[in-house]
Picture 1 (cartoon, rainbow, N blue to C red):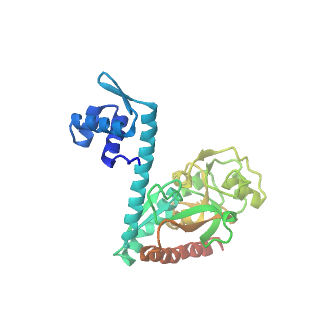
Picture 2 (cartoon, rainbow, N blue to C red):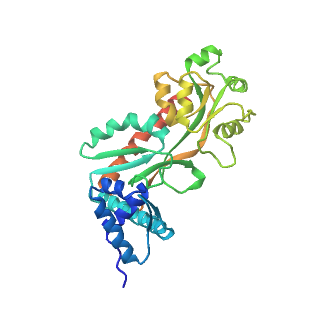
Picture 3 (cartoon, helix red, strand yellow):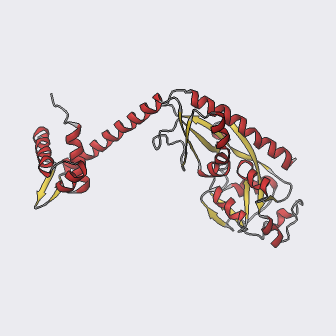
Amino acid sequence: MFRIPSIQSLRVLESCYRLNSFTRAADELGISQGAVSQQIKSLEQRLGFAVFLREGRSIVATPSGETLVHAVRDGLGHIAEVVEVEKRKQRQNQLVISVLPGFAIRWLFPRLMSFEQAWPELELTVNAIGNPLDFSLHHAHAAITYEPVSNAPDANWLFTEQLFPVCSAEFARQHQLPLNEDSVLQLLLELPRLLDGSPTETRYRDGWAYWADQLGLELALDQGRRYSQSNMTLQLAELSHGIALGRSSLVMDAVNTGKLIRLGRQHVSNPCGYRLVTNPAMPASPALTAFQHWLNEQTRCIAEFEHHLLS
């Protein structure tokens, strides 16, 4: 029966391939060049085929050697992932959550101090990434997603929210906008709008298109500067670069502090929402339960904000 080579010899193989040198691999691994050469020689004898061709002082992987390196990388990567997941399972006081950057910056981060005060014994790490559901990236216990409600109509959504245009007070002053009049909506046809690539209902190009259709407006949807994330457009709106489409959760703090103001009295229900999705590879934990409870308490402020601002 064929015996799989030792982890050490496979690490030497991967290092030699990546660095294209026995000498540099020896330096990286903290062993002698002779030891590296002997490891590769013994590996080739066990395998029954050459993994490197020696060309003077340089080495070139054989096709078989290259195939083996890719398998080694996959295997070692999977081992490292399993080890990390199992370590996380044992640490009941640690919690890793993945969220979208906009939600993290504009809503979650400003409120984390209250979580730390309520649960000082728990260690919370937040990853702000573009795809929170890719649990392999940071082995998160759970993710907060933003997606069309139609994707999972029966899911336990954290909250839904409203859409309405926002700008800075300075921008409104410069363009003499009637803040509380619905006539301001017609002025959007002429003013710079900030577009972003956030999800919306699938048949609409972006949130502005959905918003305009719900209100029976005809906007020139291609006119405006487009950015990848909503937090970019909202930051630019605060800097008086144009009008952004606000979502309640992302603009509530800026509106409450006067950095942004609402335009008009019309608002549209957001077809998208936020939900907490747990990592199926992770068991339930007291830390995650505590975070869910805290999150449910905190999201109530969004409904309160909408009641005061939009009613």
